[in-house]
Length: 386
Image (cartoon, rainbow, N blue to C red):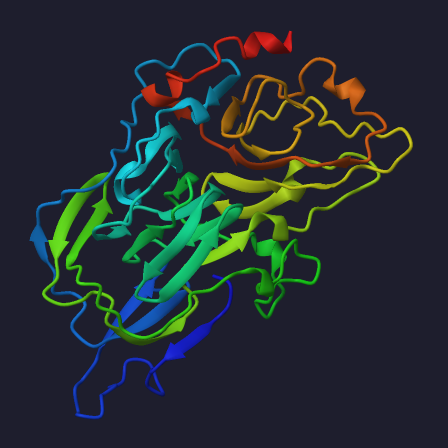
């Protein structure tokens, strides 16, 4: 996904024998994408990685039904996710889905305990935005420390668990059912990130691999088809002695994103950070504003008939919106003109910088809200634009 890593012990050539000093044969596992045509990582386990037996699944969050029984009128929406009761517990159990379609599921979670079992999402890549808190993502590929204002990526099918630290936690979860990748226009022919890309290879925090690990845990939960399935291993699942490949978890600080600035207001696609099927994920970060003498820095009203616009507010003063706070989610659906609140357009003239911080998704399929989202909806939001 980012670049190739080789850590620990691996044989000289893939699919060949790797033995310990005592002659013990290690076992290869291929973690692939797009069947066998996409990026991949090859792991080398001390024991057979595919011997887990079915067991009761005692953990797992519920994904909402694909049918929304209360679609409601076409309107702008504002959901105050910060007002939801904090469920707590392990990350494995803590997600509260709020918005969803056939491509993405957006949830919030406030984990305050380490996962008691390993988890593998067989349905999607998981991208988190850490609004508050931090901790360690642990997998067979190593540990990825993460903290506030980090994106955190977990590839589909990777067995892992979260160990949050003692700080209050507030995470946004984006389940990417069609996979996640870096926009292809950011790479050159050799696969490097281009010099004009909005980030570099050095900005990504990769796993720290210390060899095999036995935490005494043998249970694993696998999500597939929206259902959760339990398995039990006879040995430690994190028994990897080395690995080689490009598919692995990573953390990326949102403030490492390099924003573009122009004479006049640029379209939101210049904030594009990650891509998934049916959506572009964008980062709004503090930056200088447009420098034409007559520039209007506030976003212009636009009829973006091809996508719904979702913004998760993470900090600063978001000049185009009133009444939103840290943790708010706004949804402006296709078919309704997107635009700033009254007065914001005019008041932005002459502004030279913004301290706003937010994560935005433009989704090509309509988003639906769960009952949990509707329970914290700002009922007067659409009328506030009049």
